[in-house]
Length: 151
Image (cartoon, rainbow, N blue to C red; front, side):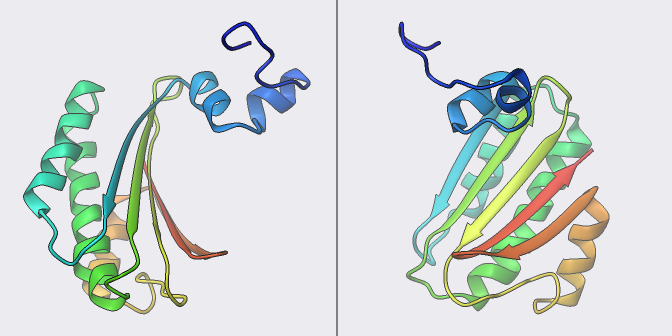
């Protein structure tokens, strides 16, 4: 229910495990989100790093997790994606923290041709991201998506 009406309908499994609507997923998993978007090559790196730090502090993430998120952002976005993709395509970064299970995930989406910074980008950056995260993967469906999970 939302604002007096049925917002999403289904079995408990459908609602809790496979929500159709983003708002339901956020509510069920007790997610906190930080959304960032880069629309030009003139990026305020310090500002973005500070926003990730503020998000982590507000949600009581460990200092290690926050630092790992900041470093992954810097290595993936600043060192690889922005250098290899079209300046016109926006890069979107959505970071989620689940109060329900304590997990943190960063999703980075960007347009252009298929580009996987984990295999095509800077080798050192890819190695660092793999070491700093518990899981990282790239997919390409209507654009590029990198999902980075943190313990």
